[in-house]
Length: 361
Image (cartoon, rainbow, N blue to C red; front, side, top):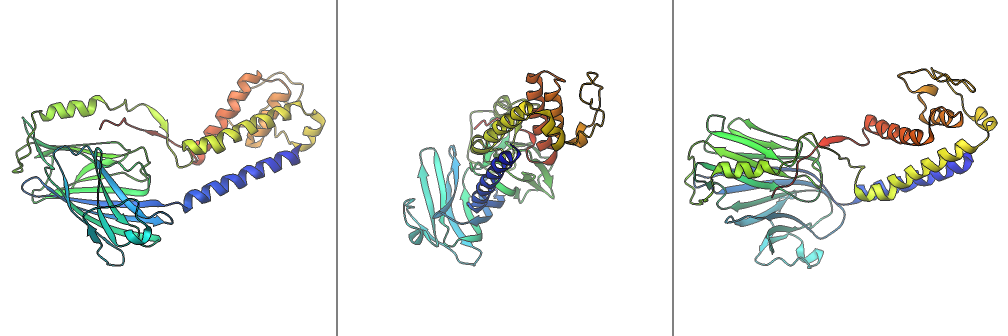
C-alpha cells in the first residue's frame, strides 16, 4: 500500500512540476511603469515602459475600452535595442511574426482600441510605448476631475505596475482628492505627482482605476459633462464590494490549476486516508511513531485538549490515529484534515487571502 501511495504521489508531483514549467515558459509581463503628463488643456501624453519575458506569439498589445469622447493618437514604439518601430496606418492582427516585426499600429475594436506592436525578438524584452489621449480631464458641473481605467489587461503582471500622473501644476491635498480601485495597492501624492502603485503582483482579474477630483478649475479643458463629480463619485463607490469580502488569490490558485491539480490531489488524499483507516493496526504501528504530544494512546478514550499538532506535528499521522481509534466522527475528521491542509498551505504562502473590489467600468 505504501509503495502504491508513493508512486501515485510521485506522478502528481511530476505532473505538477510539468504544469508549473509550462506556465513559466509562457509569455509573461514582469513590470509596467506608466508616466502620464497632463498639459494645460487637460490632454495627456503617456509613456509606458514594459518589461516582459516572451517565448511565443507574434505581437504585444494593450487595450483601452469605454474611452467616451477621448481618443488615442500619435502612437509609437521603441525597444531595448534603441530601434524605433514603423507606425502602420492599419494593423493586421493576422499578419506573420516577420511582417509585424519592428512595426506598430492601432487596432480598432467594438468598444475601444488596442495599441499593438510586433514582438520582433523573443527573450527578456523592454518596450517603450508613447501616445496621446485627448479629453483626459473632464469639466463636470461642479468641478474638474479624472475617472480613468489605466490598466485592465486580463493578464497578470508578475512584478509591479506603477502609474505616475503629473503636470506643470503641483498636485497635493490643497487642490486634489484621490481614490484608486481594482487592486490591493495604493494611491498617494509624491513630490507634486499622483502615484498609483499595485504594491506587487497584479492578477489577471485586477485592474488600476484612478479617480481624481480637482478642487479648482486647474485646466482649460473643453471636454464637459452634464454630470457632477459627486455623481461620478457615488457611481464609483456604489459598485465597490464590501472591503471585508475575502477571496483566494494566488499564482497557484487559477481555475485550471484547481481543476487539473488541486481537486485530484484532494481526492487522492481522501482515498489514501480512507485506505489507511481500513488497514490493520499492526502494520501501521510499525510504520508510524505516534509521537504522543498530548494525543491519547490506543485504547484510551480520554482525549485532552492541546494547542499543537499531535504526533510530532505530522498531520497524516494524527489523522490516522484519530481515524483508527474512533476519536472523533469520520465526517468531522474529513473536514478537519482538509481544513488543516489548507491552513498549512496558507501559512507556507502557497495560497493567500486578499481583499478584492468589484469591477465597475
